[in-house]
Image (cartoon, rainbow, N blue to C red):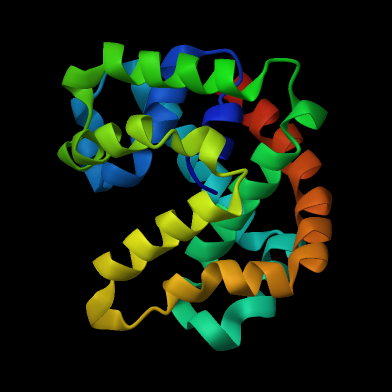
Length: 195
C-alpha cells in the first residue's frame, strides 16, 4: 500500500506514523539510525507489506493487471488501494480526510530533520498536490502514474496507462479492496500491540 493506507494503519501513534511513512526509504540495517519509536513504525510498515503481499485479495488484484504491468503490478495496486481508501474514507474514519491529511503533512514537517533524502525530495510535491486527498480523484492518480512512469522510463513500465486499467477493472478491484482492508486493519492493530 501507499502513503495514505500506511499512515492510517499506524493508528493514533504519531511516531509510529512517521516510521511507517519513511520505511520504504530506509534500507536494511539503516533502521538503527532512528530512535526506538520510529524503528517500531518502520517494523510495522514492513509487517504490513509482507501481510499485504500474501493476502489472497491483493494477489487477485495483481493478477487482474499482471499481463499489462508485470513486475510493476504490485506498486500499481498499492496506489489503487489508496484510491479506494480515500474515496471511501468515511467508512473507515470519523475524521475528515482533508483534516487527516493536514495532520499528516504537519507531522512530517515537524520531523523533517529525520526524513531520508528521498522523502525530503518528494515531500513538497506531496503537500503542494495534496496527494493524500488527491488519491480519491482519478485525474490526480493520472498525475501520480505519469510521474512514476517517467521515473521508471528505462524499464518501460507503462504506468501512464494505469488509470485506464483501473477504470476497466474498477468494480472487481474495489471488491478485492473491500475484502482486503478489514483484514489489514485487524492485522496492523495486532502488530501495534506487540511493538
